[in-house]
Amino acid sequence: MSYFMTFLLMYPFATAELNVLTIGPFNLAHARESITTAYFITLTGFMCFFIGGLIYRTNNTQTPIYWFLMMPFKKTLGTMYSYIVGSRIVTTLVFALYASLMFFVLMLAFKAGMGNNPRGFFLKNDSLRPVFNLTNSISGIASGLIIARIFVYNQRYDKILLALFIFLTFFIGSRGGAVGPLLSLFTNWLYFKKQGRISFFTLAFVALGILSLVAFLSFFRSGQGGSGAGVLNEILYGNSFSDLRDMSWIISVWDGNYFYGKTYLAAFMSFVPSSLSAFRMEWSIGKVTARMAGYSPAEHPGVRPGTFGEVYLNFGIVGVIVLGILMGYSTRYIDRKVKDAAKSKNVMSALVSGKSGALIGNLAITAGFFGFYISFIIFTVLFLLSLCMRFLKSDTGNTNQLSIQKDA
Figure (cartoon, rainbow, N blue to C red):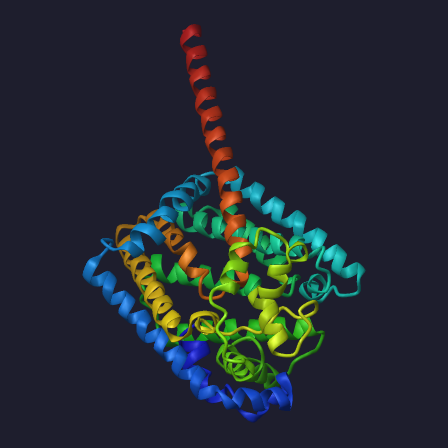
């Protein structure tokens, strides 16, 4: 999605004339000014991505990248994750929490006359925005647990739970929230059930379905219908895969003064609501890019600067090189673990290894850093709950066994 779709495939369409339908003639003129710069910055990042993969091939886990940026999260988030996935009751509780939050979010949006775009409603209400952010974070946790259980235990109950989850999530109008779980389900099926072997036509059919769904959700959120031509225009010239165009747009209106980590510091402070922090209100990446693009940060979530746009604005090409290496290393590590798990059928080991890239994965676009903290808090609570339930179950089993022995 980051490399093939938004970079290679979209480059010829990034500043084509029909983008005027989405961002207007003035902004399109700006985007065209820096498209070559944006392309080569992104290309540099992905070249370093492959260098990072080569470093893993050569040194395996014997690197500071693994010791300090990956292993701590594998040992904490990964360990807790494996315990939580093992409990159907805990997974159900997470789903119930998500469903309750979703009903609350939809009720508020519907009452405000924005039932087709709850995200837009909460963007306009700073005091309520943390509720929406929390719902999105719980959404990712719930879908991750349910999908993990499907591939570890293959139970009908979890498949029904996932169907209910996807049905609920469609109503929020969030493309990532609705499409993400389906994409995760498909890729895990491809890894663990098909050993990575799939026909080109099946892959093309799934890709077309995902793209059409993304376009449909965009039309749903805007309250408009869509013809076949409209769907194609949304994919090629809309906001769903516009990272390269938007990165070029932001660079063209940027004054050239690096941020030197300010948007990253704002992300690390994301446990503080923006409405309570002048620094976050000023330097959160969404608010920064919204202002740069000429929008009101109170009403617009910001413009996506692509995989390497934020780090470039902060640290220049050096930051792009470093981030590319980190992402390439962590992705290659997880890739290796997934392939090993596919062969050994030890799905849980692959799922646990995926948690090792939690921090590095959030460095590309820090807008979702709030979810990183929420994940840690929720996982800790659920982990303790899982341990308590296992202890009670074990204690009940021992009590019953003693009772049977006494009766005998």
